[in-house]
Image 1 (cartoon, rainbow, N blue to C red):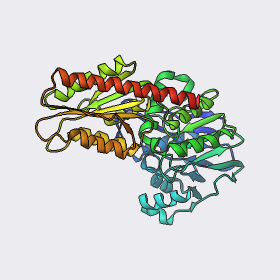
Image 2: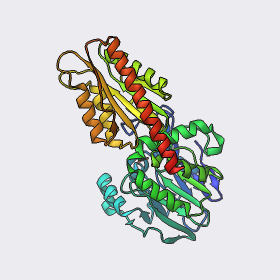
Image 3: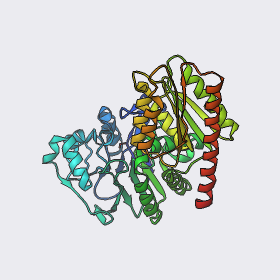
Image 4: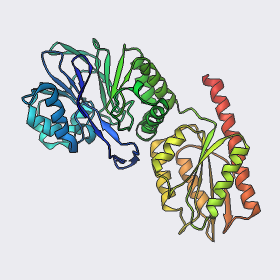
Length: 408
Ligand code: FEO
């Protein structure tokens, strides 16, 4: 993709990864992604904000040459985040452009030296957060964004231009030729924003709320993350609202039912749980873990108020893909969800108690009675699963109503 001047003297020089389907090894990205980087040419010095994944370093070089010519000089590099999708081309940038300084956060120093061993000899500088720095006539302010997504994350704000380069925060995995929020379908944009939040930023929701509050005090007309669309105009307050809503982890009148199955017994229970949820007035999404990536479940859970988890007992344990799902879920620390366990067994029957332990570790409220049936569920077993769905619906509706009363 050719570079685009997004404001006078500010260029988008990042790349589109059309074929990315496995983002960072744990998040499915069916729509691809982008690694956004920005070039500021309006002052006496040239500043590059972030680089791109190493595989795309030559494309980044072409984009820079497109703006500055083949003898391009870059004076300063700002590394808002050191994860390799953004710092992967830093060695290429150092060798080719020999910048005077690289600005990064205090924790960025640790990540930089850990990931790029040549960095010991580089001109690294840790600026003060919140202070304006004059970089060749361009005022630059570094913004605290720790843990959105690593300890090293920071944002870069240009007060005169009212633009924030926000790093991972507000990103979306979506490969497109469009660059701006108002050029794309709003429903897809919201879902992709939620997907990124649910799978990347969610564990740090309290920090997100703090950062969003601080950003509201700043005059931002353009918000440019390192993945996906750039927000401008009315999209800026809207995306702050969206992020605050996600970080509040408000529950919705919807539930997710996830399961694994061997001989379809747990699957029959899963379908009965869904019927009970719908009878109780709550919509549901049903996911067999052999057909679904764990990241999709987490995205749906962000827009839900409960999760029912099912597995047969297998070798005194649960099925491997349910263990994967629950391990992944636990790491992302979802809040304000009602949960329940169900499953079938042949002889030992540990499935529900093992699922329940995971749910306890996540500090989720659980329905008291699990549904556990021996071998294939008959009428009583299926009725029990449907009752579980109805009980869950009732609890979700109560939680949503309470939430709305307390939070408006
Ligand atoms: Fe887009 Fe945390 O890297």
